[in-house]
Amino acid sequence: MQKIKIVSLFCLFGWFVSFSSNAQNVEELVSKYTSENGQKYMQPFADAFSANLNSGLFHNAGINKLGFQIYLGIETQLAVIPSSQKFMTATTEGDYFPSTRVENVPTVFGPSEGKRIEDPNTGLVYVFPGGLDINYVPMITPQLTVGSVYGTDLTIRFAGTKKIEDVGDISLFGWGLRHSIDQYLPLPFSSAIGFYNQRFKFGDYLDASSSIISLQGSFSIQVITLYGGLGYEMGSMKISYEYENLENGQTEEIRFDLTPGNTIRLTTGFGFNLGPVNLHAEYNLAKQSTISAGLGIGFGYK
Amino acid sequence: MKKINFIIVITALLLAGCGDKDVFLYPSFTESGTAFVYHEGEFAESADIDVREIQDAIRDLETDGEITDVMVEGIFLDVALNATPEQPANTAAGVVSTIYITGWDNTEYILVENLEINLNAATQSVNLNQHLKKPGVDQLRSILKAIAYNSVPQGKNQIGIRIEGNTIPNSTFINAKMDVRIKVVIEYKDEVKGL
Image (cartoon, rainbow over all chains, first blue to last red; front, side):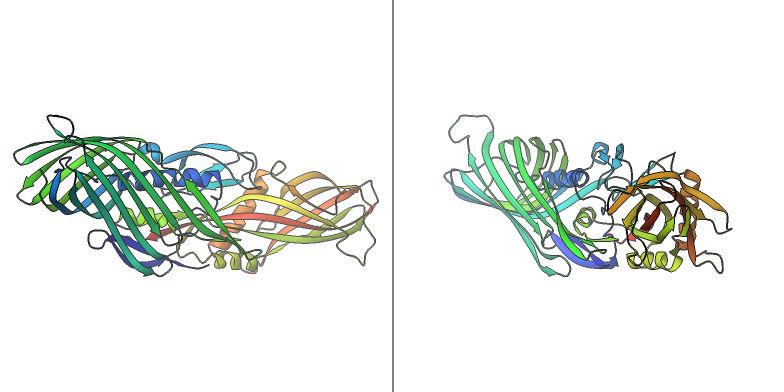
């Protein structure tokens, strides 16, 4: 059986650093999951990943009508995995064991020990794979926002790595456009509407895209900015891997097309503006909630 | 046996970042013991499985961790008629079979008792899960555990499986290959290195 190197990904210029740790064999972790159970098993990952991508995209709704504005910073996101995302209802697969519907089966974030079902009459045992016992999914992304042209600014997220053994290329590209609303309406606070789109690729294994439309508002008092927003999220995640049957030597592609479950998102946050330095933190309330914090340098933003 | 190139699950772990994690893995494989049955009326044949075959199957899984359990997920009986062409053709319409497994202490345990199978197809696979006897399955699991844990008693190199039965109607001729196919699940505990 081919070994897979675990490639740890984190912060490279504020995003992913890749490096290999010990070669580990986790290929069989979800070997039983080739159908509906697999979708359910991976769904929480899609939810958390997408929720992180859509966090920390803005920390101020103030956009000048014209003039140079720039912000360059690092955004950190943390999806806190609720217990409801750690378990699923699954049905035994294959011909050997009688078809049985089972509650509290681990998802990818669930407990590492598999769920066993034993037939008391025959002693046969069916095991659903365990998860990775994960409580948080963090992410770090670099972010650049530049404006303004007629109250519009552009946000870019970009990161990537060269080909990694056993994985391939890893890349993230995201863009977003915001347009000021308060330039048209006499509001007591800054407001904008924005659209962001991001795509993350992890070799041939994962292709995720995420979009969010958000209505943003902010209010600044001296060095403090309070901000918030209401967003609508959309996304998709395609996961694929190879399944090889050693009995017949044939390899087939197993593919999951997942739709992240997040839709409505409520953001509330605050920031400190210390000269050009901005430090901010926010909470995003959604089906998969996240915490986000960022640090950067900006010029021209209110 | 099956294998998977699966890396995406790791992503979640990687993004979660730091620390080593224990994971439990559940690879599986199938092995079978074969009996060629060509008899008139009553018969008794061995369908033993080599201990070495099980050892090789476990070795083929190439999992680095520690084996923590062995389970039997299911058992099939595959029947192929007229598998021994130099013998007379099968004339039996059916067969009633009992399958025994022999423990390391040479005690026989019933896996399946008086299972009636219609021999109306050239090949067929019979899922035994509705017919299995728990003491027999438990004994099989115990034997498989001993193999996985390298604690097979000296001189034991076969998992003893015996199929005995009678033809329907009586005194007709059975010419069939009978495979007792077992699906085995191995539980490994492995450690995944984080950051």
